Length: 88
Image: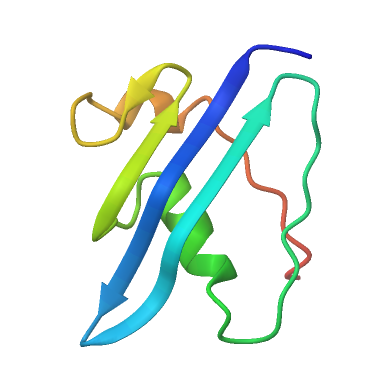
């Protein structure tokens, strides 16, 4: 297995009292390919917004390329992250 590229621990997102994501744990290693599937309103876009640094999580930890969200300047990391979407 490759090195850990992304690690998410206990990630939660709440907005306006609503729970969008609750205690998500996930790890992506180099060489892996993932697909995020789910019904409308299930939190897919919110998860991707957190992982790309555009949405601040309420709880939990996100480590991307060895940099912990909230403890590092993610502006440079955003240039190294790509998201492929089926939205046309």
